[in-house]
Image (cartoon, rainbow, N blue to C red; front, side, top):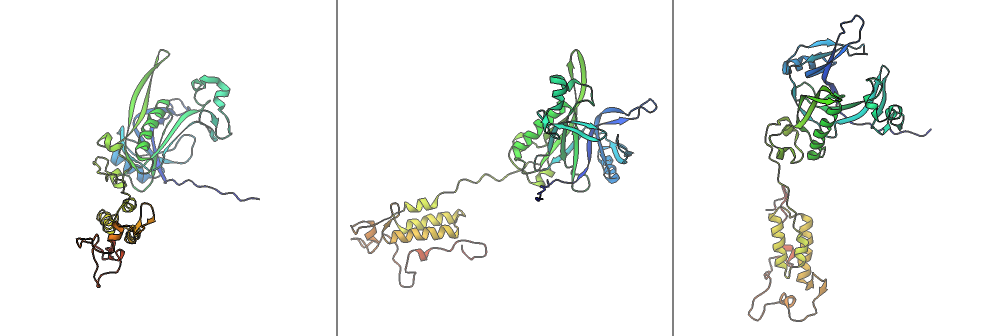
Length: 354
């Protein structure tokens, strides 16, 4: 049997969930719990400590709570806030799909074209046609958006998952996250402001009220939000104006400049300028030293041709002109015998070069 390689996706620990609704007991004996849309955020977790801390931060009363179709007790708080400040971690933290859940778990997960669990074409569309989304709840998939955020003032390092089943919230959340990812390329955290916005729409003569979770970068200005990746420290302080380092200008092509020089001194000047700009690497120094040496030997570095002995710049390197003037500095016996050896050391940390 061949071996199988399992690729594990890295993700932060999920500390709890952020909800926009809850359920209350039915007024009828034995009846199903009644879902309630909340005007404020609801936080739930297996940790009582987290929920008690959430109540301190956002108001509300912590309570023991057992989710529907589960026997495992958790803790939750119906907060008094309709707005949360959070941090979007690096990567793409938004997951969206059409899903159908039953007592046995997730029965369908579809992208609108292919049902992912069976790899068949959309089952809801095949069963009910184009109007499948108008079928009774529980018989077809419903939009499911999940986003993982960090709450900076809550204990421990991990994420809180916000989940929504609204068509309208799906569009709003996707638009906000796309804007964040366009700014950071998913490479850095981004402070977010999330709030519950109550909206209404008229369909077939009937008014429908629904909540939408808005997700936008929490930055003092749009310029800051779209200026690129942030450090974690900047993301923690979303109200601060962040000064990002300027984009480094293109580095000059010092080698190309040196090849156009007519004297060794001119090449030395190119290296001095590179060194002053912080670009004087050992590799560049050695390369330019070689070019200066070729020029001193009479090589035309722009063509690679050695001079033919005619009177010109190359010949002037061997002695003074008629007025006794040398093209390059004359080296006495105590100085290096070649031009390249007189070059300064490259400035390096601890290297003594200045």
